[in-house]
Length: 340
Image 1 (cartoon, rainbow, N blue to C red):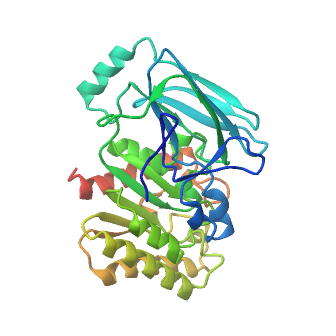
Image 2: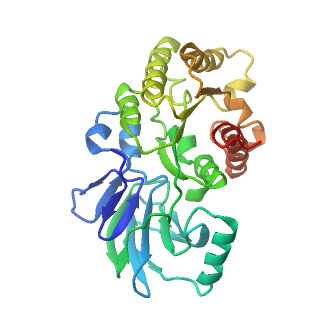
């Protein structure tokens, strides 16, 4: 589980399985095994097919290549192209096959020099097509001579992020604008995004899946916002305790950061109590295990400014995502990398 997929001489990063749609056109990318996906709640079942954090990665073996993508749904979505750590372009992907033409920039040697001098995490000769965080995207075709990433072209460390639409990237506009992706960029690591908009229900099977994966070095688990309006505190407690203990006991040597509710509308309602109960559940689930690398994070310390929220007072705006990445990367950096 969790091994990066090689398909037609490219790597499909953060993709576990390719699904053939009913009309047979292209392949739909699933971030988790389909056998697991179909057992989850309806939101997670659908949004596991939204390619948040998914990339088409390859080396050009000829002058150029083309990647053909298609979105499901009426609204176009943004894909970004990077050469290593450097953004090259962005493209609107529609519900008709959309062709992205790719070639190395003329200043590739300078990009390579800067990458080496500044120890940037991605090799600039590696082409990265970063897919939209929503909706589902089909890979239609890959044209040209390519080869998969080679050892040393990508970061050694991987960061797994489980959570809600906030982790998924809703309202971040560009796919690399989510707090999870920006945190990974700041820390110089690769992101495994397991955010499921509306679907982070902490099921046992998703806990078992994360616990069984051995390809991540540290993790964040954002817990609560998708359950607070639909689950009683006691059931939330049971699910969180199982998730936290299962993952932590399976990876006692890895740093795991359990984040409770980020700042949201209930924090501005004096009559609300349930959000305090949910935060206490996450804190207690961590404290009862008393494991040195299992850490509780108060979500209010990551997103502090109400102006960093959109109008629903749940989803962070792009500026809110950036604030979160700044605070979270600093917190993680102090623990994982001993950065002051």
